[in-house]
Length: 116
Image (cartoon, rainbow, N blue to C red; front, side, top):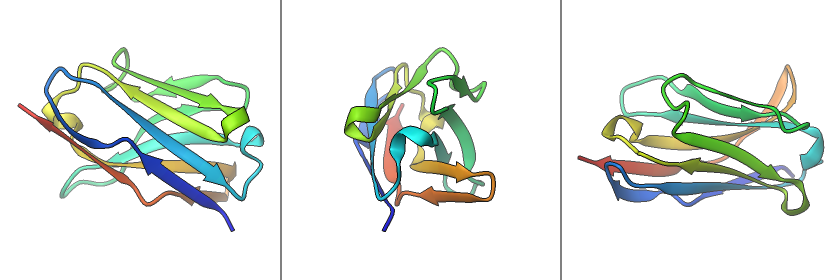
């Protein structure tokens, strides 16, 4: 059974930092690309960042230079370091494991709230 468990969300003031974690089980973590998405109230879920099995990364323009995605294959865990947070970063952040183009798994999400 695949499980993706996000943690690290919370309330932070604008300009602050948070580090999200996504712990994976039930998949061969090192073989899979992983990604972070987010969904703000009343908006569609949107891409935030992605890291391939080989460690290559890409980011949404809105977070480039402020967020850093990483992975630790020994711990089956992915991270999202978020710096210089803005109120518009407020959303539920979701972890995604990309097994194939047609098969992926999602975590339950963790709330990030940035106050102005």
